[in-house]
Length: 311
Image (tube, rainbow, N blue to C red; front, side):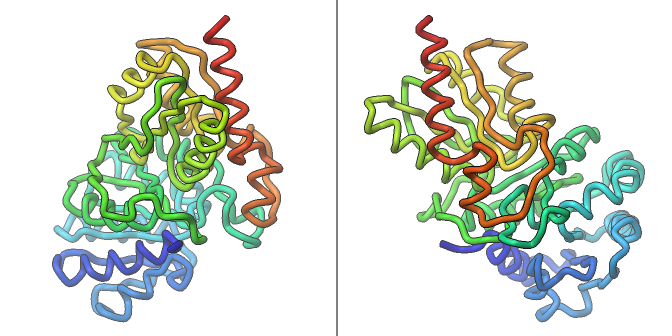
């Protein structure tokens, strides 16, 4: 298992060797976001902005307007809530080529503390027009995503998880912005997941397979723009959908999938995620269980939607 933040830092440093326009901005958390890899290689292209995220976004906007490709990173709670106005006015409105990186996303930050867990970052960024949102499932997909977003012109919000999680794409990945990837085929139900919840969803599918339930697992790493075609196809072919996300169920992946289903092909549907409650600190395994997001909880949700389909 490889920490997704490690993959981000190393991928960005490698990208810096290839593309001299890539620059990095830090809010005094480089050792956590792993911007330190870039800073060590390219100190002249690394800007330490300090604990001033609003200013950092403004600096990133200025660099982008000058033709650079800025990656501005901090903890997700700090880089989405604090500078939301600057992101909207200085980055999104002019459509500047700024890459905002939010680290320590969702619940799974070990024992960092509840105040550092971003459970609403996607909903904040998703509400701002023109911003692409990406939540890689593992280290390999993160490596692919870093290169893809550098080639994509326009504002992007990239989620970066703290801890080690199982690798899914061990032999490379065919990552494309706006496209989902099916990581397990199935005909009885569909689980659409994002980020590290994809590995938990695969674990749930193994539990269900032992019961004779054939579950499709779709990794929706691009949450905005969502791959509507993949959502509709899954709904039509399996008749049920469960979403799993490391985020509040309001405004994130579950909301995005619900919107697609509601407008195109309603089916029995259930969301797995943080159910609009304030979170607590703990180990990742403890939090998965406490907040009803473990593989067994996902499997139970699948059983429930299948039962509703048969009725």
